[in-house]
Structure formats: structure tokens, C-alpha cells
Image (cartoon, rainbow, N blue to C red):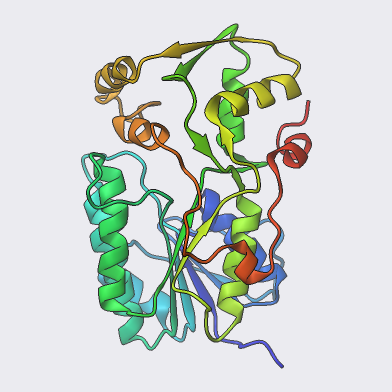
Length: 301
């Protein structure tokens, strides 16, 4: 069967997740349209390849309309992790996500894939986590058959969780969030991109909600130790009460790009694991990479 020649639109296609999705779609033979405020083509793309760029903003409906013209699917990979004067979580993750879904439906786009995150909860004390959950609901109200994806903590050769832990591993002492017992399933961003490419390549999806995590359910303490050992380091790990972290985060909040926010703390303060009764990699025939096998590639010594 020939591949559908209509493009898959990746909004936020130049971000950490978006650029991997664009490459995976391209490698899988799908036509791609990269949409961003400052779009650019991946280095792998050559003249004549079925990849194009469109400049648009998730908060501007008029700029989005031409980006959706003739598309068969749209992937919303836009992310905002800390608020600024011009952008807040609600404007991006709720209003922006719903706006894109509404315009996609009007344009005849058949599939909408929304990037959210494990732990999205409308009752969370975190404005970020609440906005993710509210954004999911707002999108489904516009497109009832939208596909919601909730990944665990992401890493890859270009950044993400492991790169952050590698910087910490250089320190002689590493402070932990509480006891460091919260568990997560670190996920290679390439495996998430593969899942998205498989979802957009099929006319119908087996489920409307997927949660994706790597095969290793590790405590934060164990993950820090694993990265440190890989890099030949032996730092001392000390427990720091969450109340202290929250006080520090409040002090850092006035910075333009704070290295720590209370939203981050609310996320790391609880388990970040794939739940029950949701779609997983198994539904798509994908075996995700483990952290241990990824370390040499993501963090070469």
C-alpha cells in the first residue's frame, strides 16, 4: 500500500521532542511539515526531500491556518516548562492546544496527536501539571478521537534527563529530592518518536490514551548512582527535605530561566510510572531501550 502523500504537521518541530519526531517521520517515508516560530530543516534533509517548513505560532490562529492546509495529521509537540511574562501554561497547554485542535478539525485533518505527560492531573497543586490535564480535556472536546500521549522523563543524545544528571555527577556531593525514592521510567526520545511515527502511519489507533515509559522503573537515587558510576564518579548522595527545595525554587522563580521550579518539584515528588488500562509500547509492537544500554550512546565517556 502506498504511503499517504499528505503531510504530517509537527507543531513545535524544532524542540527536543519535535525534532526527533520530524526525523523519524521522514525516515519512515512520511511527508513532514515542520511548524515553529523559527522553523528549520533537520541536517539529514536534502533538497527534494518531502520535508517543508512553515513559520507559525501556537497562540496565533491566523498563522496556524496555512500550516494545516492539506494535512492528514498533526502532532502537537509544543512544550513550556516555565512561565514568562508573555507566555503562561494555560495559554500554551490549554488554549493553544485546543485552538490547534479546532483549526485542525476545520481543515479536515484526520488525526490529532497531543504530547502531554505522565501524571497529568487537573487537581494537582502544580499549575503546569494542571494545565497539561486541562489541555488534554480541551483537545478531546474539540476532536473527540484525538490521541493523547503521556511519556515519562525523556532523555536522548542531545539532552534531557541523563544530560542533567551527568552535570550533577561532576559534583562531590549530590543533593537528592527528599530520600530520592520516587520512581520513574526514563524514556529514550527516539522511542517516543518511533511510536508517534507508527501512530500517524495507520488510519486508526487502537487506543486514545497512551503512556510510554522505558523498561526500567528506577528510583531517582538509583538513577543518579547509575549515571555517576557510568562516568567513573563516586559522589556522596545526601537527602534534602522537599520543603527546603520548595523554598529554594521560590527564591529562584524571578530568574528569566530558573534551573529549578516548584512545578518540577511537584513532578519529581511522586512516582512517574506507566499506569494501568492505557495504551503502551506493546500495542505498537515497540520494545523501548533501557537506560543501561543507552548510556554509552547518550553519555560517551
